[in-house]
Length: 173
Image 1 (cartoon, rainbow, N blue to C red):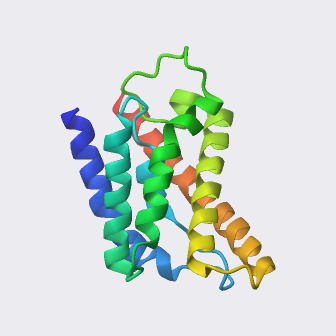
Image 2: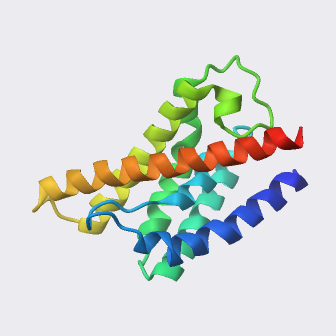
């Protein structure tokens, strides 16, 4: 558990400021926003309790709200995503599989199940974020375009990040 806490704290310290400083300004075509900090919530261990994962999700969103001056939007979305993480995970991986103390990754789940899991998580987050942010359905086409483009952009970056960390884990073995 201590190894997880140190790894999560380092990831938190790197990804939250990187999201606020770099990735919030890397918007493609004024539509697609990369949300790389979601890697913190997506890769939480399956065995982690719902209360703790929800708290960690809230803290990630809260600190991102502080850095980006978005009052409570990311906190709400991250809390809901962290709460829904375990049921979404079990949609793609059966309860019989022994994943004790493992984080969801392409190695532990398999590439196709992990891709489905990550796409679902990113789509839920982007839908929540942009719906709450717009708080209107006036420009419905723009809302759908932002959700789809941001989800695709975020998924590509998160999958690349997972592949990079996977190679580093394999090199240690």
